[in-house]
Image 1 (cartoon, rainbow, N blue to C red):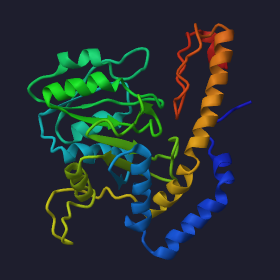
Image 2: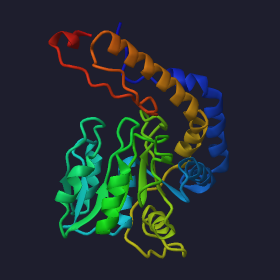
Image 3: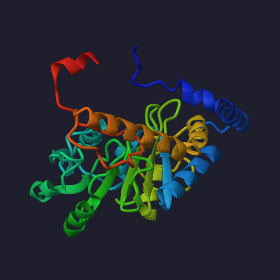
Length: 297
């Protein structure tokens, strides 16, 4: 039996009526880019992540890019991050002419190992981007302590971690800025591209808002910054608002399924122990020994 890696049909069937109602609301409003639907979704994400501000953008990649633009990252400056991530993390840095500096991962969590950060800092270092993977967060306390000591920005790549928390603090709320993706396969995914930047710094929030919309200032068509077209559309926001209401329930279902897999893998000897981390809201990473025969399954 072939089981697809991603199959969203059942999820959408369960909420189809609510999705259509949300889409009809957008069509009736005639606000297709930004507007009240996006503003409402931003408020809901700000509340969910316990941040003062959430700014909707066009993708998770653009969330990273506009966050780096908001801190005024300059060519030839450096940003410390992990090589074990999607290309967009390093790509956003390089796109601004800066240099990604890779620090290895902690093999237990697959996230940036704080023990390697200080050795990678140079006079050109401007920021650290820890990447939260599979719904589990990087070890943020030592990362934040290092950043404070060296006066560096921390930008959380939380594209895979909406709903995760670190010692009671939600993903996206610990750094200066948090970046989220709503690509369809994410645990909160739209029907196209979308992203969000979170922050509790009002000045950074204002810069992100201006940068996502060509650098517009308070006066229309008066550009105070060189920005871009990084705006979230209302259709994505409307669909995501519906799905956000179900996120906690879906997370609970994933956790129960993950616990079952851990138990079965442990009892068959495929893993040495049952992983006790059962709170991943997206995926549950399991490290299995390689055997050629397993590939058939």
